[in-house]
Length: 266
Image (cartoon, rainbow, N blue to C red; front, side, top):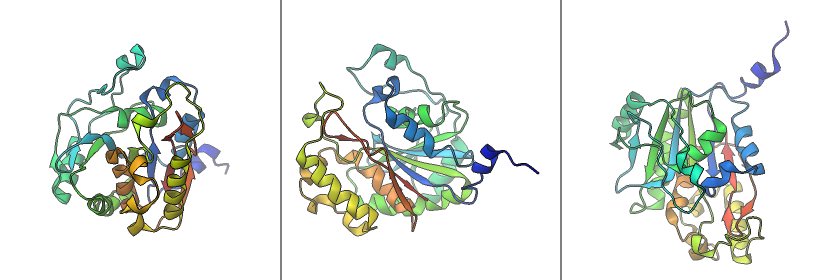
């Protein structure tokens, strides 16, 4: 009996979903023919269709961790200064109200069924799942809580991987908007940015989780982590990854110091 190659590929991760950290970059990346987009798409080309997707977005900051399985998945255009048609873009995935309710109650999270999806969610989702047919939940970050608390939340969320839920953490490792070169998308990164990232990446590949929850000992961390909310989704992904194999992808810089670097844990 001949087995369809595509169907065969879809069986690779049928027992446990991977965890993805996506360096989501600037929102207008989806209007461009950037090679990063193909790499995002590739990450979901060989897994079963998720029963649901949980996106941890750097662009939803709350005092307490909050999960949203929204009644009406409105598209939030939480940015300015980009192309006009980007503000008209819509991503209307199905709601996951009951699933979000169940997760929120199990893990004692705040529950919000009204907030829509911000660009930390819909930018990568529109590339990875353009058919808008998979229920999506969004999870906030809480910069007033410790970095280790975010990592520990990830560990609590790891059970979802065995229930067909794909966890996507959407942030940026090196994120300092004041030090970007907006005039040159492909400008080479500054030395401080690469030095920080190289130390960070070595700790990731060596699985030094305790080091990664206290990254300020890395050289140039104050510059690189000027917006800590963009680092926090990575820590949740790291916590959910358990003893996973780590595969880096999208190893690019944009606007000099904006890291697109992403990771797959499986």
